[in-house]
Length: 278
Image (cartoon, rainbow, N blue to C red; front, side, top):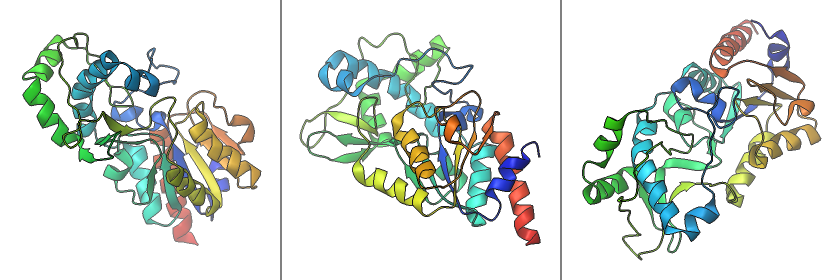
């Protein structure tokens, strides 16, 4: 193991985990801010709600992107964290990702801080529906759109289930089937607040733990960084695994500069072996 300080920090401790987009890069989903990330300009909530052209572009791109995300599989890092939860080392997990890969890997106590790609909600009446149901409706309105987009090639899926699709001008999207209100993916957009009950649940996970492990997040966005600040203020040690600098480096007891998958797999093996010897 290349990080004995990390093992020493987490041994015999109940660990809460905070993950970001870097957690899913080995599953084929690029992150926003990693050293090798392409330029990205995610849509803001103001753009989405104020301009029908932005909504048309978003739904066209999401109509392609969500399918790729739905088919994406967990990597070794996701599986390692699920294994650590099953053995009682990890007590809960907060993820900034919307890709559901932690749940697919078998993690049970997961707070999806920014929502998930798999649900859609009406901003007017609150009606929710599955993204797969909406996909069928959008396909009926836009027959062959996905196939045409894929034939052009070069589709890249972003962490919010957006995809690179050039021609969106003719795409038809849907309003709420109950009240004709505006539909939106159940994802917290840039400029939008995380629901208070979800934030409270995440803080509770941190408070109940003996250590906080951050994996694959630059902590640039405050919605994740606040949990590192909270842990540090309470004297809960923080460990960070991430490629590149993070906003929380100065608050971390241990920082390991590497990718998540291999390091978490090694960490799971090491902590499991230690637990077996105790």
